[in-house]
Amino acid sequence: MRKDKVLIICGSTATGKTDLAVRLCKKYSGEIVSADSRQVYRGLDILTGKDIDKNSKLKCPFDQTVRRIHDDYNSKLNESSCAVRIGYRLKEEIPIWLTDMVEPDYGFNVKEYKDVAMKVINFINLHGKLPVVVGGTGFYIKSLLYPTETFSVYPDIKLRNQLDKLPLVRLQQRLVIEDRNKWENMNYSDKQNPRRLIRAIEVAKSRVQLDSKKDNGYLTQKSDVLILGLKAPYPVLYERIDKRVEERFADGAIDEVEKILEKGYSWDLPSLTSTGAIHLKEIIQGTKHSSEALMAWKWDEHAFARRQMVFFKKLKNILWFDISRKSYMGEIDDAVGKWYNQN
Image (tube, rainbow, N blue to C red):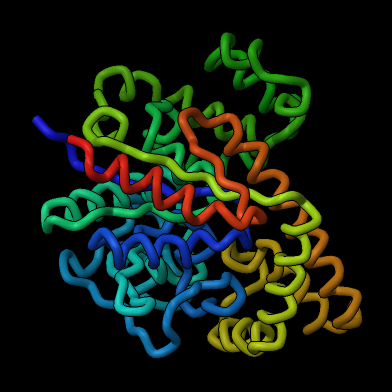
């Protein structure tokens, strides 16, 4: 039986992933599924670089909302913050799914992404379209491809609140009790990282439930997947990143963030602690001049791009294309055409 086809386009920021995806969607009747952890938040189009038509509104053709799984989650502002909206916005008439899913105070996680993304991918396939997963969030893409137990464990908010109060040594002792093998296989840096220790404890406590459930939602088990990776020499990439940072600042990223704050949201939210937001905070609060903050923003984006490449190079079966080469688009067309037309 012929498997459903799924195309994935990954790589570091500023490599033109979305533009390529739109081009291929027009050619192969596809729809885009975003894999960007920054773009799941509503109201931050400019800051997070949502490459979507400005007048495009979110359309939810099925299951308007999904209630948050954690019963102990309470929005400080409104009831809608407790829901995930599954829908799409348009770029050049091509749907881009899984942006604008949650309010800025929602702690969205990779498990939720995997569940929602698989649902949308199946929906697109059932309608005879080609799902094109696009993004630079490595954990999101990995969660769709390869079975890893941590992707099957939802954050336990109550447990995290308890563990957050413990000193480092107590967290280390707790993990040894819960999962000695995990502790012994962690590197020194992870053993000194409270966040990594808390997540390891969280996963360890869920192991009984994990062992009794088999996750059949991974693309590698049910689909014919082609993975394209976009890269560039770092000097070329840094120049593209710098241009994007300047464009976002000029387009009104500060105004956008200030509107979020005016609604009552605070700086400590997941949506406002990412690269870019922390630098705009310095400008808004007057702790840095805009030129100094923008330079720091660019440097942090450079470092982020390097981390993305380190992560993606560890994944298997990615066909890499250097966007600084004039022939790269033709090479991509050949690879996708051959894959798409074979049974």
